[in-house]
Image (cartoon, rainbow, N blue to C red; front, side):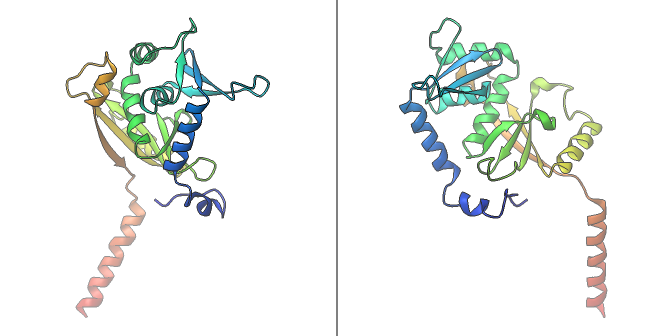
Length: 229
């Protein structure tokens, strides 16, 4: 599916400024400003322009995004209720306690970000994430992402009706369903090191269009008849 750009000039603006460059600039900016995030329940509040108290802005980050910025990109510090900086293991235990699926969501988030996709929460579409090819100001999200693991058991997509409803929803908002299956490879999720051993299997799920296939079949039959004559 081709990108759905927002406006006639969006593609022209995006091409000379790929997400890899934007991410690099963001990383440098956050490091230079000594940016700090504040743990707040199941999210992290990130202060922007902290040196200017009047103009200070706060951004709410998901736990996965905050951990990625802190642990992988190493461009922010995260502070707990005691106003002390949390190390990676402390963050991991805190975030895992807020959501038992955090290790799998975190692995999926990191997997998509390493491919230079912009990843945002997808709860409004009934999925875990939505993925953008470029900045959300320029393009619509392309994938609706569901994260599955062996912990799901009889959870999502376990029956045909789940597939049918999810695919219909994705189709109505012009998104492709991307299922990421996380294999733990026998490793526990008590330490951050488990992320290195988890494997991600990507599966694109699309609906079968009866009308389209009927038209294609008719065309093939006509071609075969013409060639025989």
